[in-house]
Image (cartoon, rainbow, N blue to C red; front, side, top):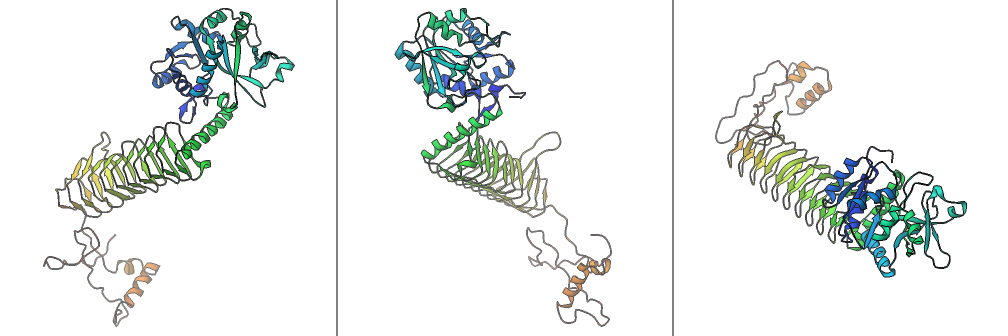
Length: 505
C-alpha cells in the first residue's frame, strides 16, 4: 500500500477492511473470533478492540506466512471441535451471506476442507486451484510463484477463505514446513495434507469475483470502493430513495436512509448519518454522523456530529461543527458556522454569522453578521439568547452573556452585559456628520464632483451667488433604535447636528 497505515486499516465504504472482516465473521454467530496481528500490531489491535471488543487479538511471531498465522490463532484458542472458518483481512466485499453459504456447503458434504474460489481473467499473483478432472475435488492450491507453466494457465483462484474441520486443521498445521519459493508457512498446504489423509476437499465457486477480491494496492482499494458504493446506492434506490446522480454520490455502509429521501448530485454521507423520510440532501453536501429530520433540506453544507430538526433548512454554504442542534423548522442560512449550539424550534440564523457555545430560544431571529464571542483566550463561555428575541445586524455577544426572552438588540451593538427580557440592548457611539468634508478635503475627486452635482440638483438656489455650494439642511441624528436614522420622537426636540469642522472620519 506504500502507506504508514496498515493495509487492513484502510477504509472502504466507511469501514476499515478488518472491520468488514469482523462484521462478516460475526454474522455466522461463532463461538470465538480471533484476529491475528503482526505488522503495526498496536494500531491494528486498537482498531479491533474498538470494532469488536470480544474478539481475541493474537500476535504472530516473526515466522511469516498464512499458515503460521493460523497456527498462532489455534494455539491461543481453547480446544475446539467442529468447523473453523478462516478469512483474510483484506477482502472488503466479502459478506456474511457468502460465508454462510460456504459453511452450509461444508456441513452438507461433510468435508474436511471447503474453500471459496472464483474465476478471473487475469490470475496473476493468486494461488491456482488444481482440481481432479473426474470428481472436481480440489487436489491442491499452488501459489503463483510456485506454479508450473500449465498451472499458470488456470483461471480459478483461491479467495483465501476456508472452512476447516478443527481436527484436520490441527493435524495439517503440525505438518507444515517452509519449503517454497518465499520461505513462508502456507495455510494452503493444509489442503494437500487433508487430501493425503483421506478427507474430502471441495470448493464453492463464487460468481462474484469482486466480492472475493483482495486488496494489494491503492488501485484495488479504489476499484473495490467504487464497486461497494455502487452496490450500496443500488440497494437504497430499490428501497425507495431517489439518488439523482449515482456517479457523484457516495454513501457509507452504516448510513441509514428512509423512504422518499432525495439525494442530489455531489453528496457524501459518512459514518452513522441518519436521514428521515422526505428530507432532501444536496447538492454538494458532506455530512458525517449527522441526524437529519423529516422533510428537512440541507444544501451545499458541510456538517458533522449534528442534529437537524424536522422541517428545518440549512445552507447554502453552511458549516455545522460538532454539537450543533437545530430545532424543528429552524434555519441555518448562508455562510453561517455553528458549533456546540442549541438553536430552538423556529429560530433562525440566516446570514453571515458564527454561533458557537450558544443557546438560542425558539422563534428568535439572529441578525446578519452576528458573532457569539465565546473564547477569552483561555476558556470558552456560553451565550444564551431567549425565545422570540430579535437581534440586530452586526452584533457581537461577548460571552458569558444572556439576552432575555422577547428582547431586542440594536444593529452594530457589542453586547457585553445581560439584556433583560423585553429590553432593547444598545452599545454603540452616536453618529455625527461633518458637512462638506468631501468637497473641502477631497476637491476634484469623483466623490466631490458627485456631491456637488447632487447639491446642485437637490433644490432651487442650491448654489449661492458666489457659486459656492449652499449649506445642506441639518442631517438627522441616528436614533438609538435598531434600523435606519430617524427624526425626533416622543415629543423631544431634534438633536443638533455636529458643528462643521475639519478632521478625520
